[in-house]
Image (tube, rainbow, N blue to C red; front, side, top):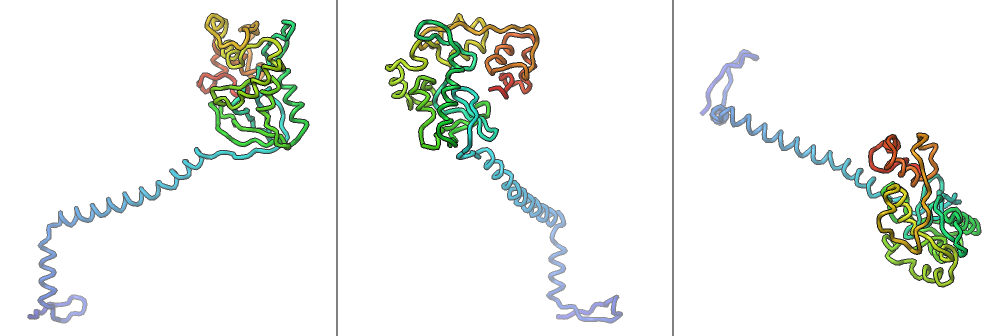
Length: 275
């Protein structure tokens, strides 16, 4: 059945089908609140979908940064101390070994003190100079954000293994899990390097100096006997540029009223550029 309606735009009467009329009436019968809720729900769904997908890119990017590792670093090395070198401005700590600190004293076969840390650094420098460049394979970042790696000379000789076998460094079981135990046994039997006299484990020497005089009262993990500690003083006041080692900076942090100024980020490590 058709009905007529007046079209205001054309000024004429026209037919309107019963089907269209029924559709209009049905649409008019739907509550406006229901229509509004349906549209709102669809908008919320679309918004959530867009946000979820737009957030994925930053997450992936952040994950790639956190898991990034430098891989292989190659170049001519500058020696920092007996277990740390620098290549292209990157400090690299040898994995699994520990060498005496620059200020550390040991006793030779005659019982006299000598700067074993400096001797270890000189031995490393001579060894590296014989076959350049040096290749270092990344293992991990340490807590000071230093590159920890396994390094070899151009001729393939392992730097860490050579240092331990020549008695210029020791196996550090905490990190090596005994990887250089055989080389250390060889050095100890031959009484070469550190093993010719008496010395304190480098990690214990650092711990004693970082905690100040009170540290001498606690048990130490001694390889032979504890050595005479390097003495520091809170006077005069110093800045990081006037301090020569990580151990010295840490001593000031623990023992001097002004020491906190050496730890700008408050992480408990003073003058991190020295460490």
